[in-house]
Image (cartoon, rainbow, N blue to C red):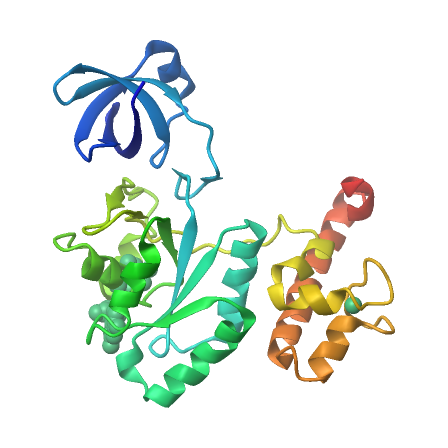
Length: 305
Ligand SMILES: Nc1nc2c(ncn2[C@@H]2O[C@H](COP(=O)(O)OP(=O)(O)OP(=O)(O)O)[C@@H](O)[C@H]2O)c(=O)[nH]1
Ligand SMILES: [Mg+2]
Ligand SMILES: [Zn+2]
């Protein structure tokens, strides 16, 4: 049975991009319909019943399923920030990165609005994340810088954008998908929030080569609540090797003696501000756990075992 990718859902009709590149309009077979188990991004088995029309027979197992926006089979997130306007902010970037690491989503960092800062500043902003191991591109939708590299990084992937308001996510989508005409600027910030404006999600094939990108602003919300304090350190990739040197198993890298992470930080192998952000997030998670403990009488360690 042929397989296709669901790119759009409108009023009970599922648009499917087939393997030969054509688009079908399909309806799910009866029992599938009741489960409302098909989302944009799904791989589905379908039967052709007439030219351009199909019936969906089944949904392939998903690699992942993200909520808000509800999309399936994302292979990477392009995390967008701006060098300026809004101000460059390492703490907020790290907050997003921790969330994406916790979801185990491979992340590409785009530092946009490169045209607004001297080249040296742009390089200085990007350097730490490159050193940590994230592919980090300096882009501009105004002068085209980094857009070719962005397109290359999208090849073969199903990408969704993430990042705070005003950094240029819609402008980037418009730049790489000609004719998309997404609303940009101050207005969209307001429209995106309204309760009644849940916009339909589309999966857009790239104009060249292979790959898809979702036309949504992606994650703009940041809740780390789901993360237990012991799992936080794993969201800082550069802590992994030094943590093997910690004297205690389960070392929280705070005040423990002979902590490999702290030693690496003091030796200059971990950026002090990354370590500080770790402590900041750890304190947040702990205080949330304590509140939960007071409410329920359960300690997180007991809940986890
Ligand atoms: N100077 C400069 N301005 C840019 C660039 N990219 C986008 N902008 C401007 O930044 C503003 C915000 O861009 P949007 O694309 O609407 O930002 P967004 O990330 O989609 O914001 P939300 O939809 O609110 O989440 C607009 O006025 C854009 O014209 C860039 O590379 N350089
Ligand atoms: Mg936008
Ligand atoms: Zn440690």
